[in-house]
Amino acid sequence: MTITVEIHPSSSSVYMFNEPETSTAYSLSGHVSVSLSSSASFFEKARAEKVLLRSLKLTFEGHSELIMPETGYSASRLCSMTRELAPAQAMVLTNDGQEDNCIPCVWNFVFDIPVPGWLPSTSVFGGELYEPAGTRYALFAEARFTQLEVDHHARAWSISALCAPFFSKETVVRARRADIEVVRYLLPPVDAGNAEYPTAFPVTAYVLKMDHASNLNEKPGVLPHIPQEVLSKIELVALLPECFDVDDEHLLLNISMHAEDLPVSQRRRLRMTEFQVNLIQHEEYSRSPSRPYTSSFPLPPSQPDSRPLLNTHPMKVLYELGLVPCNSLATDASRLHCGFSLLSEKQRDRQKILNGGVSFAPETQSPWTDVSIRLSFEHFAAGKDKEWEERHGRVKALRADEESPHLLVYHELCVELTCTYDAEEEGSAFSEEHMVFSVPVRFARLPPVKSRRTTNVWPTLSHTSPFELSADAILTPDAPAMPTTSSYHDAFALPPYSQLFHSNGERIIDDSVPLPIYTPHQSPDFEAADKL
Image: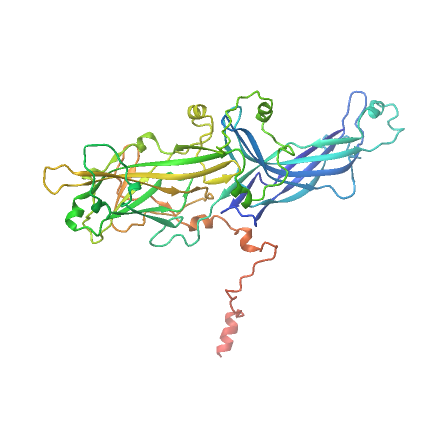
């Protein structure tokens, strides 16, 4: 007799949308199949088998594991939900009449598990030793059977009858694990794009004043500094979309500068001649979940220290036995900060602006001078840069901004602008200042679409001088195309569950838009009769 249990989810991925929320849930459905077949041998033919299905449990479990030389092994259980799929009363399964058929008898048990909407996405992070860990989810199934006795006279002298007393009455069969990937997408706001700002996400303006010492980079040199009365009049506005897609090829930064309070004669002496940018991905690892995270998201009380995980990383045993050295963090260092640049070394170099730079007195009616810098960031994937991963002992990959019990990911764009101020007398040395600032950059995963309607318009306050920061720093005439919002929403025929139903399951009825008044349709002959 052969009994097999298999898990068949309707989809191996669960797609979540927008920010993690404890009040939302997503459906994970499918069925668990139980197969029963008779076994035949040279001494006896196949016979009908009969078993009693006592229990069929399906468990959905998610966990996050961190393995690094500095932290050792640590894990947190994210969720664990078990459903009993078998009937309340024991169910008899038999292949009577089909024992000679080579195809086993199959029973399917349907399931539908609500997946919490606050779970972090599936990701791989941590050390590269043996295999990386991270956040993972899976389905597990376990069935318990009892073999029923058959007719004693029919099997009096069979080998199975002689061996039956030595076997256990109850049999436990476990299914092969079914991995589930949780993917979180961010949908742009419906009204994000308009005629002035046609981008996938709204544009955020960061205003910076150059009258603070923290915004200046003190570098030794022979050139004098720009006078403070001139610096205090400079104002910078950095325009950046609220979010970028991790699958985008470029990142566009628009910088608007003006010194309107300075006389025109002084503005003509002020120019931006060089710039340097760096896009950094910050990663913070922790051995235990932070208190703000546990207060926002309900982790189950049964953690791995009290109940082991169903799919534990193989390195856990080696760390518990002390076979792997661990440079444990100090007691006061609960988090380990790491970071790396998403730009190539060539792009991180200082770039000179052609034609002597950009003047603060543009030949336009607007007092603003605008510069657009396009960055081509690297799309790192786990295992792509093996040399870097072996040297630093962790996975290197471009990630969306995320927060999980053991990993926090965020991005930052660091900018340094070099401005010069010509002397009043010809032949005298000009003044120079390095203005340094940083702005947050958010990366997210946007849902795939078949086609994206694009536009080549970029929001500016006046004339834009775009610079493409590529391997050769080529000057480009137009800003890169950006996807509009409607293309992402058109890719989905159905809205999210939260837009159709309340949290208690009741349907959302929108009474703000009344239904049109019904007017009966009349045939042409009937209309002609009315006219007569």
